[in-house]
Length: 282
Image (tube, rainbow, N blue to C red):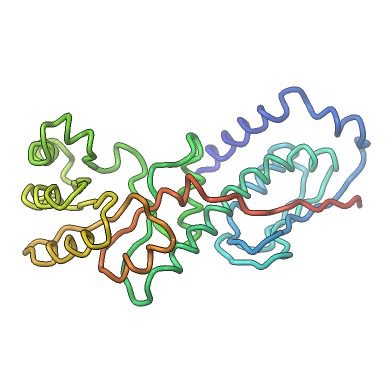
């Protein structure tokens, strides 16, 4: 992750929290008091966000000492000590909530991603990916958390891939026209993906020569039919399944033989991980 971007995100967060100072800390804690604090997992989780945790405290006070005890991507049980900080007690208290807000969010996503990846049938080559349903401004962190959990990223932004969805199809006048125009105008390095809502649209996308076809909200029976239809083609596109994806469906979908399962819930619905900061005076 780009350090300058992380600092920009932290500065915005601190502006929200500290624009009026921290009257509680300033009123109750002596300026010369020093303390140490440890971030502790209150429930099992996949650790993510060590760099943000460290940078948050050092952004408030460059003299704060920091230590990463457990690397990102590591699964830990309840009670594990993850990160440590030491320095002026006021600085630790002022940075605490912002540091935890970021890392609880990131660790929650990483934990969800690990759970979905673990649900893929053994031996399957199906890839679990996220979507663009991310928190505005936090995509870089959430995408990193998805990778940390062992899943993959979909297109990063609107300029990174051609993805023809339902409203593009309507606006273009049909799947064939949309793919033809994309083929003529898109960079040669871009694959062309088409979202289809039924088996009739699947045939249209195949005939148009789509490189990737997303099956949106397909039933399991229609997914099986789509896999068999694509398998009979001389040039086989990548098959992606999306829409209404739950953890319970992952194993069966991966056994059917789809290439990609994109899961918006990885970023828009992952619960924050339970991490607390335990502080003690020196």
